[in-house]
Image 1 (spheres, one colour):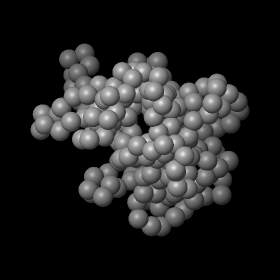
Image 2 (spheres, rainbow, N blue to C red):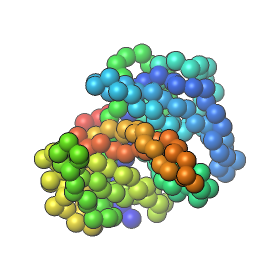
Image 3 (cartoon, rainbow, N blue to C red):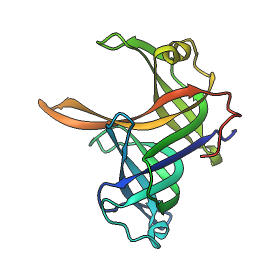
Image 4 (spheres, helix red, strand yellow):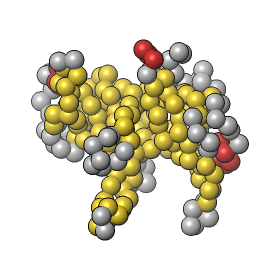
Amino acid sequence: MQTNINRIFLRGRLAASPALSHTNHGVEYLTLPLAVRRLSGAEDRLNVSASREQLAHLSLEPGDPLAVRGEVRTFNNRSGVGSRLVVSVFARELSLSEGEDENRLELSGTLCKPPALRSTPLGRTICDMILAVNRRYGRADYLPCIAWGSLAYRCGEMSVGDQLSLEGRLQSRIYTKEVDGALLERTAFEVSVMSLTDGDTYAPL
């Protein structure tokens, strides 16, 4: 199985202290909530996963400026609590880094569901997609993607099994869901598509 492109660079502020997430093959992983501001002024709150060893040389406090290079990962949450699809950023490199907030993502993969073209209540055209991005060793991540305007029309013409390469950003979105008669606030994560590429023209992140 061919490995697809999956690269992300984030720069923002640590929104809370790192907390233990899980242990895998004896390695402890922590979750770092990262606040990344958009050009519009809105803020995405993204979960970064890093090993305790990666954090050993960093003394992190809420509010610290942090840069992350890594990839976007997904897994199915079968606990019944929270979102069914959990989307996070798996850190390859971490550093304390001042500068403008950044959120840049490069992906290539295969459409695994028919694209859904629709209009918002304000009349904007939007296309929802699920992109399967292969990792090494036979695993894949299934990333919800959203495109707008002319890009939405282009994506809406694609079919299951088509290859898609894109540049965009990972964003968070707050929504409410009724559970047992009560309205609960949830956070969804999705890839906002900024441009389509041919898969061979990526600039280094």
